[in-house]
Image 1 (tube, one colour):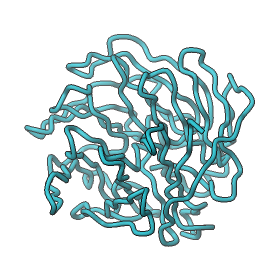
Image 2 (cartoon, rainbow, N blue to C red):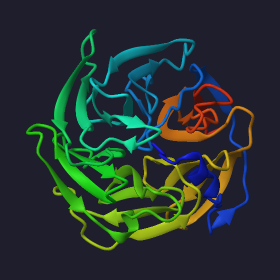
Image 3 (cartoon, one colour):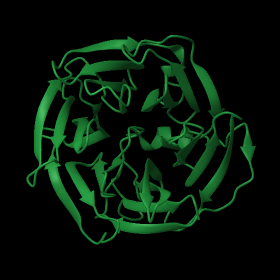
Length: 326
């Protein structure tokens, strides 16, 4: 969740990647529009695609976790809610239809409330979804990004704290958590008050964005999550959330201050705008990789142009399909 007050947001200068390459426009389709105002976010991946193609969506403005079926997207079904919280942030899958979500309490006046955050398990293996607390995070200032430590690891998650500029490792069996990465690349870049945001793991790297400034990675141990080398900046750009390609060679970054989606070539360290300034593509936030008709697609959520200071928005938050193999 990008937690900027209006004045801070206006102070942020939109950036296009230093390695910017001219754009082609990918086709988009609005699948569902939520009520206004709804900020569909969590920089952590405000949506996650199930094995059957259904999309789970979280929101910074509600504790509800909702499900949208791309083949019949008219209805958004609430499958569970974060107990005691007013927002659900990151969501990731660890085992078929077993998801983990972080969330807590946030107000426009005070920001995130330290001690309110936790990690919950969402089990969708049965007809009736079950949500249960894995662990409270009493000293975490903001639990935001979330990622599985490794595709074969069914025990450990990585979670970002953008305010403390740290990445923690959570054991979902014991509830134990420990800080594993504290790197200068995780720190906030003025005037943005938050640093490390979304997390994705691919092979032996944890990829992350530093809110509003850069897309980076750190080599890690796939068993402990500890850094095994220095951080690298891949590109500098306006960033909010991203997805990584299945082969780990590309990433797609939402850039919500310039209403765009950027495609990043990780090896070449270049980026190009592939969606921008479309009427429906207002304040893109979360990005997730899925499939439709056998082709890779992206599911992008939006904030609908919401101004947090006034809670006014241009549209409701939207779930949008981007056809990257068109």
